[in-house]
Image (tube, rainbow, N blue to C red; front, side, top):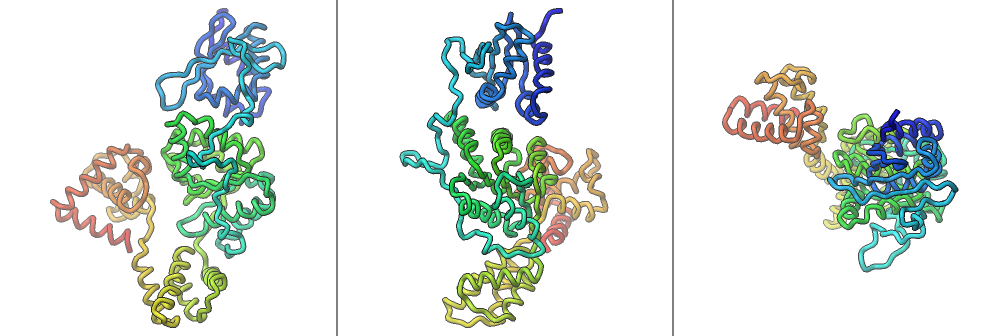
Length: 475
């Protein structure tokens, strides 16, 4: 029977699968595609140069045994490296499978360099022209556990964070995903973990970064052809903290590179800490393989603080700032500002500033003025799910009908209004809005928004729909 590339590779995979952990197999061997076989040479396609280097460094012995079993002692493996988002491949790398435990050789007999620690890597945090070897943590020392007030709304998240800080990479909370609404303390708590680890383990490399900056660094590395340096840099981190990970939504290239970095860190006992404004199950346009990894450890929710916790937060800040304030004023603020910690502290800062600049005492009258302005100016946050429910209820529909493929005029208009308000009242991308409202594409959402704008100007009844829904979604 004539051997084909697929049959040879499938036999190799069968052997490999029995000799490594299922997760490692899924990560490093399932993405490989057999291309062709020529004599004793098998060509396989891998998605990146980094992928090829990882196979060479960690699985060359296993590959050697598997290929020799199928193609004999002179077996050769050729890598066809096809970089993501490109239509051309890099020059194939031919590797002769060695009969001993030597490092693999390329056709010219030059040893393939595998030890990344001996290379000078480009640090994405270093400004060109400024020499700086040490990796700065990017942490804010003011965000620590002492200044984070514990309450029923955050006890689980704070306790898990303390456990991670005491033993990074050594608990079952890896990754630790802290999620919750705006201003509830996700960033504060993630910084606190890093600050505590730096204090207890000075030799550990801790790095905090927002997902937006991580994405920009990745884009810059692709432009400057330093993608591998970018990956290797992040593989050296002992504790990686990524803030607002939901912003990776729809960024396929960034998700792919983070997937490989995450795997490396997790498999080597390094700690990963993530924050998000929603639970993994509610994240849109994030690859399933990433979401499943987010669930490996612990997902801890931060909820809006209760009245007692709000009072404690205000008292704690006043104490730290060395300011005295009557209890009735503190209690009034705590009773009226309920949504998040950031607004609580914002009212306090405004109170202190007003009293200081205008040389006024803290009075209940002044407090009411400032609180009223905060409540009035604070826009109510709505989700795409809430918008769909409100619009469906307004038109006496259920959400499933709103999202359906039907072209009935009143249902189409309801769907277009849901898309219109989602674009106007959330930060979601057009693609994300379309995905959540009946799995439409971004062009459909754009068309819906234009249609709503046009009908609002020309159709009196439709204009009333928009006004009614605006009130329901705003107040």
